Length: 67
Image (cartoon, rainbow, N blue to C red; front, side, top):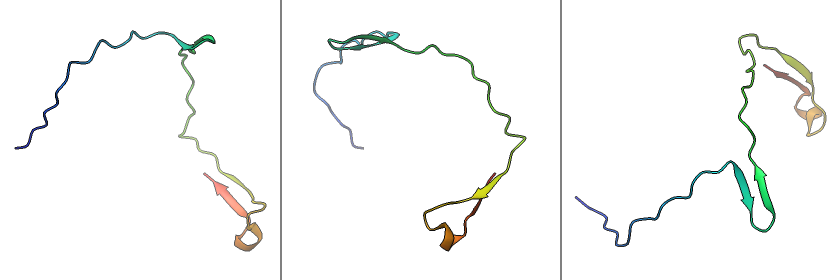
């Protein structure tokens, strides 16, 4: 079997987590608070149809459907 040997010292301690971004010589920007969001109901899908414009729609057919 092959092994990988790495010489060196153990890594130092990681910095503590903060609730802001500290930009050098410009100050701190607080991170956004976590909030619960209402998710859409995907069981009731909607179908959207329309006519494309541009990008060669006249040559390729200009209708589209989004489910």
